[in-house]
Length: 375
Image 1 (cartoon, one colour):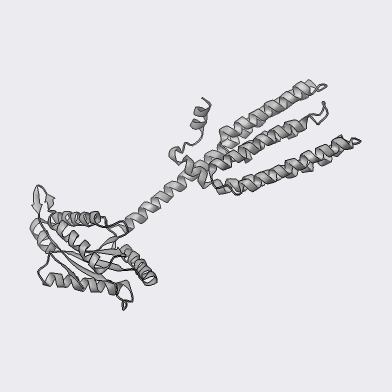
Image 2 (spheres, one colour):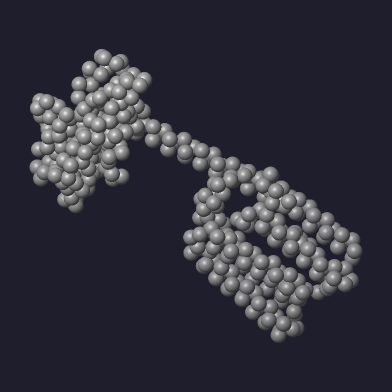
């Protein structure tokens, strides 16, 4: 029931919950570092109060000094561990352990105060700080805050003999108010962060889709000429750096104008989509396939020499020849011509390589089409 209530109030991120925590991990670590540092300094700063309470009891004063210094050293150790954390799960465990340690320490410190000493102002700060400053889930923070309030009120009621009942009732009322304020504020903060993260993810996804669509030819699902040439430039730079083989296929549909004139442009589009699908199925993951314009395509083959590229080209040519396009139960047979070229030392850019592949393509056309010609 507790979980259901929280899930209904807070923005439910579903599968994005893990991404949300990981996205905020760096900020949560910074916030925890600051919070733990403030707590450590505050505990050490209370040594002045100890000096008043234990005036004339040097042994007890030194014991308190040792306890507060040990508390500060543990805080420093937790900060050191948290700042080296890379996983959300490890961070949560460290912060949960530290929060539990702080609550227990504060309760134990209360026993060092006189029985008629009521620290109401300090006791309401702790749960409020847990709600507002702890980067843990709101459900966990609520459990910690409630446990602290119950424990501190129990100590005041069970061991605070001589307390004015009115003061104790005020302390209880203050705890109820601070929990209502803290929980409400925590919900607002967490809801805002979650909604902001969801908006960020939606905007990021929209940009990625827009970028994808701008780089993909909508008809054939191959790369656009601009994006293809951009990748080709990078591949050529990689070739010049590592001197690995690099080949390219220039592909053109034979007598494509006849297809358009005979069956219509819609059928021509179906043929181009089918041709693109054949090439996409034949290429490797590291190969790059793009539409250069009209019925012309190009395929980049990294780490592939001329002989290997000719084998790939022949396989594509033969597969397409044996794969007629189906248009309204009418099988349309067509062929392609392919020019193949491999980089040579005199190439200054990818354009040089592509021009040589185009020349081989035109030779294939001149020699009767439906064939592969390599330089």
